[in-house]
Length: 113
Length: 110
Image 1: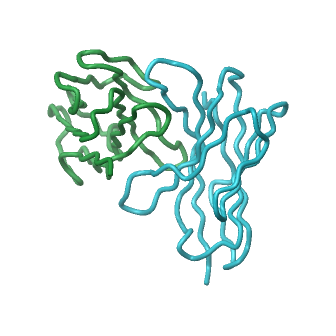
Image 2 (image 1 turned 45 degrees about the vertical axis):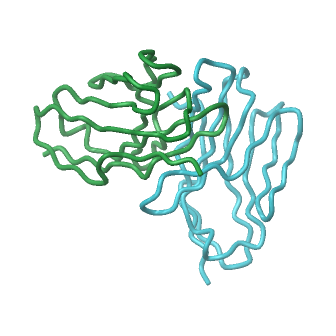
């Protein structure tokens, strides 16, 4: 049973477009929602994260939108560039020993020049 | 910069072999994690540890065990490798929320 559902599995956009990746969670005890970016041959790296006390967070061209009542959050990549081509994972965690994360299934994003 | 290193990038083993995957972090992090990554399934937690000699089962612990004798080192053990354990294995460490990942070990069991 996947507690964090991510969609779509893959996405192709033209340079300058805005890929949007959506995630939905079930566990209302989750209170930390990060997004990780993974390039081929590398481990995932933290991109941006949000807590439920805000509905939106921006860091550079990356924006998280958070809807607590719907238990959904999404990643928007503004003015996407070919260098943004990567696999993106959403995740969630609550206050547990070790702060363990539950990950979504991943979205492969391709930004065409 | 945090560095998480994994002993091998690629590994090929035979069915029934005992397999050791090693992970070392250099930032004195208390928490360490082992995941497997499969297409469409994301990262699934196998085991984690929040202190030396402490271990907790993750979501898919069957067929795996772990060892953490020193704070900086976390080992994943496949007691008797099977073909369904062919996967990418990722190690991570954390102090609080952010997890830092190693580059992964692609394990093939034939």
